[in-house]
Amino acid sequence: MSLAFSETFQQELPSSYLQFLNENPEGTQIENSEHDDARTWTMMGQAALLKRWTMNGVGEAANYECLKLYTHVAGENIAELYANSAHFGPVKLDRVARGFVIGHENGDYLYLDPEADFSVWAYDHDGGEVTKISASFDQFLNRQNAL
Image 1 (cartoon, rainbow, N blue to C red):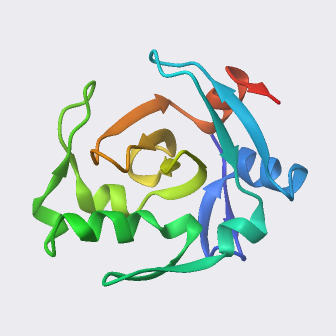
Image 2: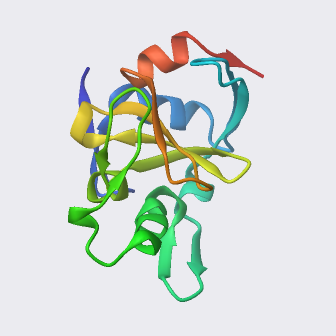
């Protein structure tokens, strides 16, 4: 996997994701049926990723960095707290907070995990659990159906 620096987001991201973003400037929907979890993810375009919003009592963030707001709700010291993952055991909340959100579905978030080679994960906002969806963004795209 090759990485490229994004001036827009001021960080390195998978080249394939940046290409996908350029090819889908308004975003798109992708059907996923991995791990007994059939759903349609709304993949955000650049404008949606950069849109800022406020979570009352917590703070403000752009959509691509909104996991830091959700994890903050769990507690102040997220370095010592964990999200549950059925397949991988506990995942530190500070790791989840650094995820780069790329899509959403019914309040849940699809994100790239920079600490796990930018693998694709889902964050369940109701229970705070995380699920690894794919080992890479390329693999995620190859297994999905664009709608």
